[in-house]
Amino acid sequence: MELVLQAIGDLELPFLDEEEHPLSGVYHQEHTRRWSRIVDGADGFVVVTPEYNHAMPATLKNALDYLGPEWAWKPVGFVSYGHTSAGTRAVQHAKQVVTALRLVPVGATVALRIGDVVRGDELVPQPRHADAARGLLAELVRAAHALAPMREREHPAAVEGPLPGSYARRLGPDDAAEVTVLQRCCWLEEALVNDTLAIPALHESPADVRAWLADWDVTGLWRDGRLLGMVRTRRTGTDLHVGRLAVVPDLRGLGVGRWLLRHAESAAEKGGRIVLSTGAASHRNLALYRRQGYVPLPGPQEEGVVDLAKPVAA
Image (cartoon, rainbow, N blue to C red):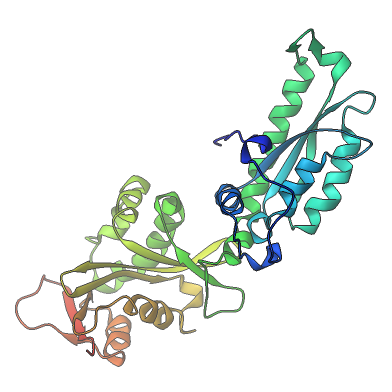
C-alpha cells in the first residue's frame, strides 16, 4: 500500500460553503474540487483524530460533509488520541457519520492515551501500538480489495453492462493478473479448434499482459469482482484494430461478446474501417463477425488466420 499524508488544516476548507448538495457532485469552489480529487483517488483512509467533548473535532466533520460519492464503498480506519478514553468516543461518534457516507469502518483501531505515549514534546508509542497499527493497515487493505467491485460499479466512468449487476470499465496494468487468467481459459478452446498452440494469448506472462495493457485501450466487463470478458482497440490512421475479444466460457451465448464488440466499435472513426482477425477454424467467431457486417480482407493472409474488416459509415 502507498500511504499519502494529508493534514486537514492544509486543505484550507472553510465551513461548508457549497450551494449544491454534496451528493450532486457539483462543486463551485476550487478548494472543494481539490479535496474531491484527493478523496476520489484514494482506495481507503486512516483518520487520525483527537477527542473533544466526547466527539470528533468540527474540522473533521466539516471535511467529511464536503463530499458525497467520493467516499462511497471505501474502508476507513481510525487512530485516536485523548486522555481517559484515548479518543475512543470520538471514533464512535465518527463511525455514525462515515457510515451515512457509505464509508465502511474496519474493526481494528489504534487508541493512544496521551499520558502513556507522550514524553515531553515527543510521541513515544509502545510496541502494542505498533502491532495495532500493522493490524489496522492489513485489515484496511483486505477491505479495500473486497469493496473494489462495489465502488467501481458506481464510479461515474463505469458503464452498465449487458448482464444484471455487470459493469464495464477501462482496464489497466494493475488488471494484468485477471486478464492473464481470462486469456488462458478462453484461448485454450481456440487452440483445440484450430489445432495449434501458436496463439500469443496462451503464452503471455502477467508481465507481458501488463505491458500491452499500457498501450491498448482495453475494456473489461465485471460482475462481483469477476472479469467476465474484455476487448481491446488501437487506432492506426483511420483503421480501428479490434482484438482479444473474450468471454468466459460459462457465459457464452448470452450476447456478451456482441455487446463488447459494439462497445469497441463505438470508438471507430467515421469514414474509416474496423479491422480484426480470428482463427480460420473458429467458426463460431467467424459467424458472429459476419453477422455484424465483417468480410474477409482480400490478398494473402497468415496461415490459419482470417483477417476481416467492416467500413464505418461517414
